[in-house]
Amino acid sequence: MRVPQFSAAFGGLVWIAFLALRWAEIDPAIALLLLAPLVIVPLALTRREDSTFCSRVRKLYTLAAYTQFPAAVLLPIAFAFPAGPGAAALTGPWLLFTAVLALAGVCGFLDRESRGGEDYCQLAALVYLPIGAAWLLLARTGIQPLEFEPQIVLLTAVHFHFAGFALPLAASWSAAALGAATWARAVCWLVIASVPLTAVGITATQLGGPLFVETAAAWSMGIA
Image 1: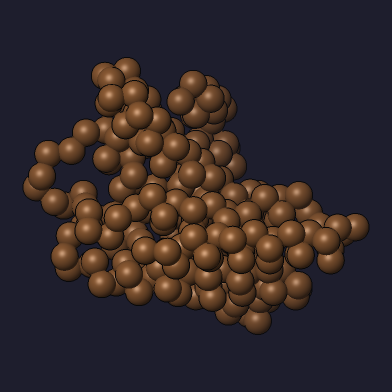
Image 2: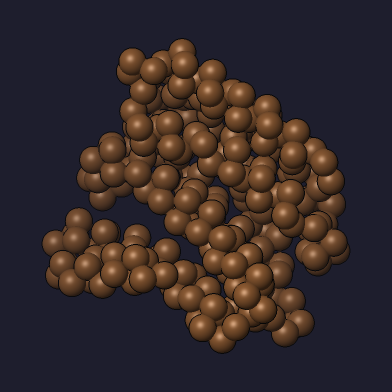
């Protein structure tokens, strides 16, 4: 499927144009976040063969590949408006797109075929991505769950797009290139565990819990 390749190319141009137009005022976190839906996600889709998904979601995955670019290109526009219902509505299509990928990931987890850590790492990436999309929607709505600062809400969206999506895929492909060595598969499992553990640690600290949970999560992610 060549659609994701074209999407990544045009998405890169949109990203560069967005930076050029708003260079003097752009938040680095926003610039980093937009790189994921516009470039990194479609690049990842070029590495996935939809035939590897169970038949029940294969057509949905194909549809998602065609809708990825329209959904992603709305996100820079969402950041051109103040946080509120209008800006949040522009992030809705991206959330729906990532939900389709998550459905494919869940279907893969339920598949009875035996899988290694590298395969589960790819499936986990698909499941984690809509969590980032949901936090992106919260960021553009202006909602602050658990009284997190707006920047933390935005950075949580960044976390799940990169540490939650790009990192598991990189770990999976690296393990496959290394012949699925035992230690490489162990790293894949560590990545899978570290992504939610980091979110739990930050939340525990926000709620007044012990700091060691967040510290352990940071070390786990760093080692992975």
